[in-house]
Amino acid sequence: MTLKNKVIVITGASSGIGEASAKLLASHGAKVVLGARRENRLKDITEDIEAKGGQATYRVTDVTNPEDLVALVKLAKETYGGIDVIFNNAGIMPTSPISALKTDEWNSMIDVNLKGVLNGVAAVMPEFTKQKHGQIITTSSVAGIKSFVGSGVYGATKFAVRNLMEVIRMESAQEHTNIRTTSLYPAAINTELLKTITDSDSKQGMSKLYASVGITPDAVARVVNFAVDQPADVNVSEFTIYPTKQA
Ligand code: NDP
Image (cartoon, rainbow, N blue to C red; front, side, top):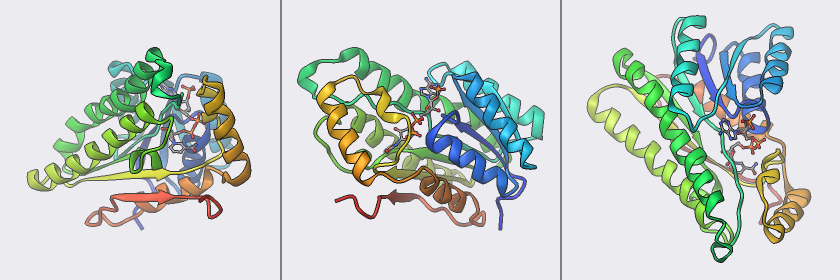
């Protein structure tokens, strides 16, 4: 298949879905370029991948800063000679009812979950357009296809990136640039994400749900692996990943 030797930039690679994906993709021969803010985590994950015979590098990256994404893509090109895929995965989920007016958290979610994805797209688009191939994978959420109480703003960011991925796919087909896009809609995946919730009722409800049905991030990593591994003329646009036990 097509995954081996692909150069894949991954944001939010320091834990959860990003970490699991980096490890799985590297184990199948991809060259992974990791970005997130916690350097110690990135270093450990990179060393772990290398110890198992894989290829990885990292750069401390804040996705809210466009220059950081440009630098991450530059690192991919300098280290591995190009870039084939960006996995826009960094995200935060401080859910709360709108009436709580946690406006700072609304803005942070827009900055990380929406503008952070746009920054990733902008960083790869010149290269992808020039080389006439590339793949953009983005972690939306089931909150990007259905409405949930407490997810007014989180869901808004996740609906938005879903639209973005589909429009990029359509425009690229019209422009003959062969850019593939994929949106992922995970449900309850046991990661560090719930730590970003400050509203106590939201946190309690989510923690209970995740403790009872949550599955490991490897489930999402396998889907990412599948999407990347498809032949160049196949675009798999969307995947919803539920724990079997989640209603
Ligand atoms: P984690 O909290 O484990 O991972 C989130 C990642 O995002 C971390 O690597 C974190 O790294 C990174 N991140 C957060 N803010 C920034 C920033 N400003 N710049 C760069 N990186 C940042 O949770 P998940 O693995 O679950 O989350 C990954 C994605 O999956 C998110 O987009 C989330 O919304 C989505 N998702 C998760 C679900 C779940 O149930 N877990 C369900 C649906 C969607 P660092 O702090 O080091 O910067």
